[in-house]
Structure formats: structure tokens, C-alpha cells
Image 1 (cartoon, rainbow, N blue to C red):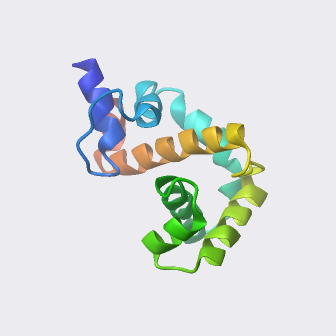
Image 2 (tube, rainbow, N blue to C red):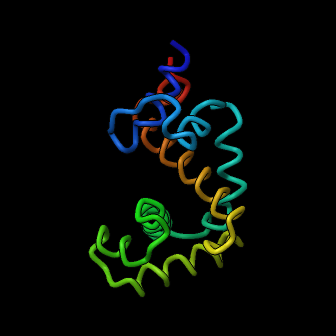
Length: 134
């Protein structure tokens, strides 16, 4: 039952069916709800001074870039913008977080923080109980 709850929390933002183990980042983000928000905060802290719309725009762009296998062109298609717009937003994300999309460790950290941020946002309507799977 615990693994099912973790898989459910990992699928909330994307509203998809998830088989536990096939999306390890979502599972990791949902597996330790007591510390994961602190992990995300430490990675995404540089976005704190931005208006919420700008923060969301940068993270949505990063998510589209991830879904597009690191391709600005694929992300641009998903977002209905020019590929240079995607590149510009990724540069802004790098400037704010200090983590480069061209560095594998930075991408891993940003990816985990992104998944945590998505999970927290998806469960916000359910309150803390939704995040904890209660």
C-alpha cells in the first residue's frame, strides 16, 4: 500500500497512470515528504524573488524541455513558442538557480526539484494530508 501511495503522489501533477518504478524521479520526489520540500527549496531558492507567473513559466519550460529529451525545438512545439524562447528561459533558470542545463548533475538536481515542486503544487488543494498520502 505504501508503494501505491508513493506512485499516486508521483502521478498527481501529470494526471497519468503510473507503474511504480517506471518513473524513478517522481517516486523519489514523493517518497520522503518530510524532507523533499526542503530539497526543492534549496535548489529552486533563486526563483523566490520572481513573481509567481514568471516562476511557473520557467519551471513549465524546464518540464517541457525534459519531456522533449533536452531539445529546445521539441519543448518549443509543446509550448507553442520559438526554440530561442525556450533557450532564453532556460538561461534565466540557470542564472537564478546557478544550475546549468548542460551539466548532468545540475539537470538531475533541477529535475528532482521540479518533480517535488509539481507534487507539492498538485497536492496543495488536498493540503498536507494529500502530500503525505493520508
